[in-house]
Image 1 (cartoon, rainbow, N blue to C red):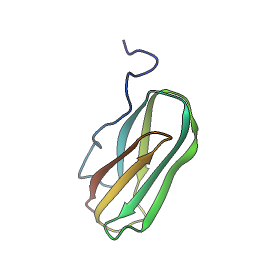
Image 2: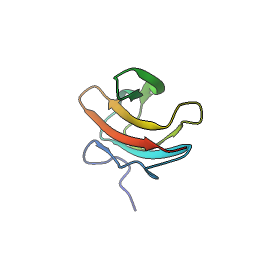
Image 3: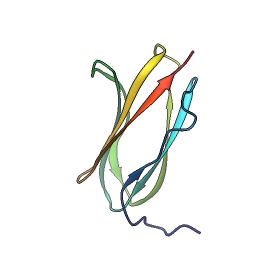
Image 4: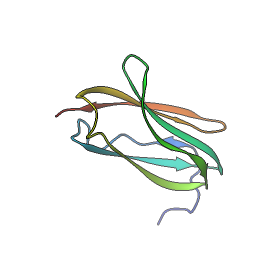
Length: 93
């Protein structure tokens, strides 16, 4: 049984990865705060904003449906008040 609030901030590995067209990541927030989750292409251009809102501490699941973007490598970047995490994901169509 999971504690209601994780001990530390964590971004899990995307699953599945490579993916088509949807991948999922688990985000553990150890405190309440404003969270932004963006997806960038390898050129650093913003492709999608998945989350931009206040979130409660706890365990969250984030899904990205990339059905409208080209195959390739993307970076999912999570920014909170005190943490930044990023991860590469590969979209194969």
